[in-house]
Image (cartoon, rainbow, N blue to C red; front, side):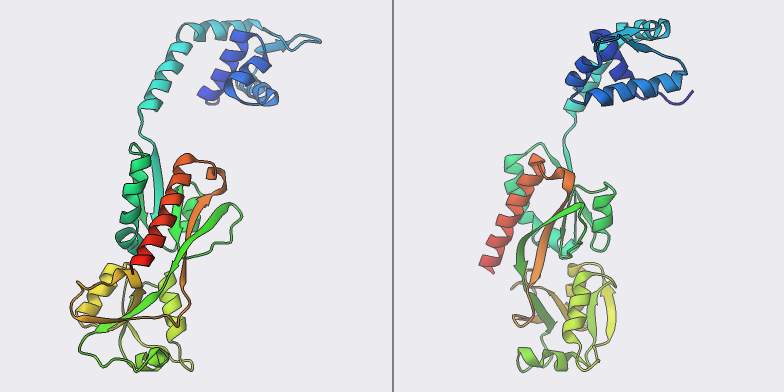
Length: 298
C-alpha cells in the first residue's frame, strides 16, 4: 500500500465526523473539490470506496470500510492533532536570509535591532551567498535575499531598498591617481585584488577599469569584502569595494569614493507567495530605513 499522509487522514476524519465534504472544507479552509479529491486519493490507496455521497444532497455515508477506518481513528485522532498543534506553536518562527558577506558584516547589523524590537521571537538564519541567491529563493531554501543583482524572475519579488557607491582602496604608500577619470589608466599595470569570479562587484569593477580592452591583472580573489580589504592593507594590491566597508580605523590604506561610477542598487528579494508575510514585511521596512540612515551618515 502507498504511504498514507496525515493530510489525507485528517480530511477523511473530518468528513466522517461531520458528515459532509463542505464541513471539512470549511474547517480546513480548503475548497469543497479539494476535500473530495483527498477522499478519492485515499480510496485509491485503500483500493475500495470509503465514502458514498447521498443523491441530491451534500451529506455523505460511510461504507463498511469507511466506518472501520473512522472507528480506528476516532479514539486518538483529535488528541494527536491537538498535541501536534501544541508542538508547532512552541517552535520559534525562522526567517532564512541570504546575502553577500559584505552586506551581512557592514550593513545588516544596523537592521537587526529594529527588526528584533518588532519580532523578538523570530530566529534569523543567515546564509552568506552572492551568485546562487535566485536559485535558493525559487527552490524554497531561502525566505529572503539581499542582493545587488536583478534576477528578472517573475516568481521573485524584488524591491530596491537603496543605493551605495563603490570606493577605490589602495596601499597608502602608492601614488594616488590624478583624479577620478584617471583611475582606469592608473590601474592598468597595478595588481588588482577582487572578489571571486561571478560575484557582482567583481564584474562591475572590471567593466569600470577596462581601458581600450586592457584590464588590471587579478592577482588574488576572495569571497568577502573583509578578506579583500585585508589583502589591500597587507600591500598585495588595490581593490574596489563598497564605500561603507572602509572607515577611519583602516590603517595603511587610502580610499577614493567613486562618484563617477554608477551607484550600486541593493534589492530586497522574496518569493511571490511571501508578499503578505508579516515578518518579511517588517524586515523590508527596517532594511530600507537602515540603508537610508547608513548612507546619510556616510
